[in-house]
Length: 177
Image (cartoon, rainbow, N blue to C red; front, side, top):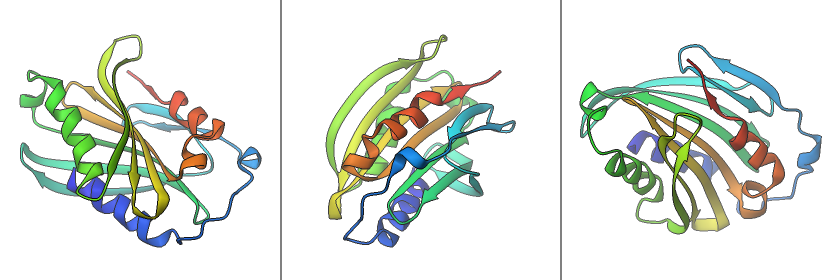
């Protein structure tokens, strides 16, 4: 969770205080398939990938990040990480709350928060919107499937993270077999 917070902080620092509006209707979304991550999503461009091993409160995990940054205004992310099998048999609520709280950190303000069921398998999930300093917003959906935690995130100004293009990205996420 701390890795995700640090990555968000990195993008918050590179996004200038005075963001300019982009014409998001010109974005071209392409289907991206992650065989390792077992998911598909429509990214607005070819995503970059980063892998980093992290030690957490519940053990070591490899965090894989796929992301596309649109100028300095907007970024689209899919994170996934695998935890030990202990997570499979535990209550998913604290895990999903921990993901939310890790992103919110001490400087975030929770704007929206909703517990949901994701996909046809009705996986435990949570969708939330967090306001960070400088008018930056984090729109995130966290999904737990077995011992794997997925995060589908859009980072930018409020009107950008609430745009139909951001919604298209989030709704396109699907977990494959």
